[in-house]
Length: 215
Image 1 (tube, helix red, strand yellow):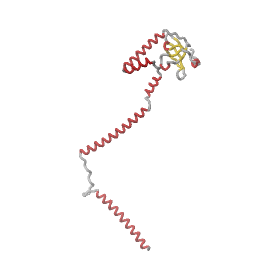
Image 2 (tube, one colour):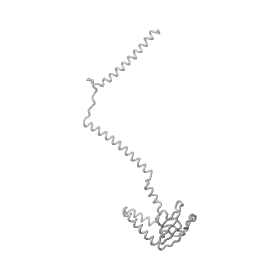
Image 3 (spheres, one colour):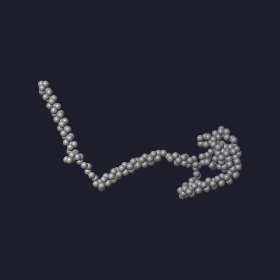
């Protein structure tokens, strides 16, 4: 092939590329002009009626409300799940305190269940106060007949429920009151101030002997 033919081919290829570019530009311009009205202005937006605008607004509000309800439902479910896996601090303390209460005999448990089921909160509060007072009166009466000596081994049968059943030594004795040193669940010595009727004679354990609490 001659150099003249080669040059002609290149020109033809260039002309073809230019032609294709012009054609593409013309089509783009044609498409753009199609979007313009005959008077040279852009086509106007379709104007909605009042009813159509109201309907569209209501639909948007409904969709927004539905999304909000879904979010709130998801948060509520997550909160319930989270609360279900943990114990409220205040209830945890109450539960622990209840676990330390002494066991009730069958008759006492039956009476307790009946009262707590059939009485309201106010009556239960009043009943608890009356029982506490009655118990104190009886403890005082019984204490008058009890004689204790310092160093005597005793078992706690009344007072703070945490120490009922503990065995200790009398470190001080009065007419109706006494001081008793016991070992708590952790093995530490605790000094209690009780009615003499809230203890009974018992054998002292070896571990308490070693604490040197003879008074």
